Image (tube, rainbow over all chains, first blue to last red; front, side):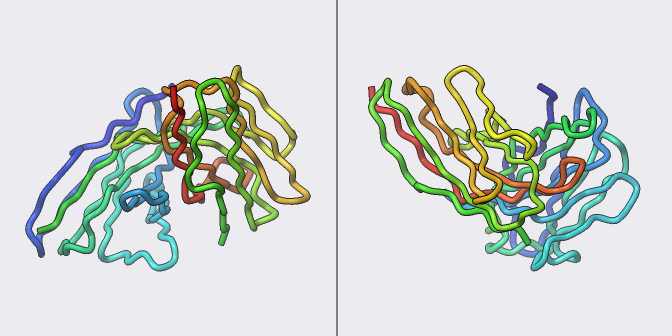
Length: 118
Length: 113
């Protein structure tokens, strides 16, 4: 299957600082990427849809100014957690949609980023 | 929005037995239902998916069934092996192109040798 790379795999930061997470589609172009958040032993919660060349679409309850998303190219989306606090500590994971014939697209996930805010 | 319920939350089976995980969804417009396997600290891996125009799909030891009327779909794993042990997530999505996925809460499957 297609490869989605996510960096960093883990990051520790101080409260109040900002952290940027990158999601890259390595061997295909992804006009749409998605960002999820996963707490320990819980499900993946969709945070936002990242669209290349346009503003991201955020799910209800997700703060736009807190979680900045930029999708500047067909292979890269970034999630910036601004002014991070301990409650932002979580596993963040992206996914990218590989284009195909209508009804045959696939989603592939990045390897995830474990964020710990001290 | 879509609400996906998944049961059971934990499932233990003996090697060689079958395992069944069930999910229900709320949005009748949902038309794509993938299943993901996630090992601890790893990314979710797509293991099988089904679209609303079919009722069943099989891939070797794995099968998925879909009942659109009842809005539920199930994952069936036959001849389970210890390496099948992982967390399994069902998900639902709507739209003519693959869109936002809404996940169930996951099932921790343990296969005992």
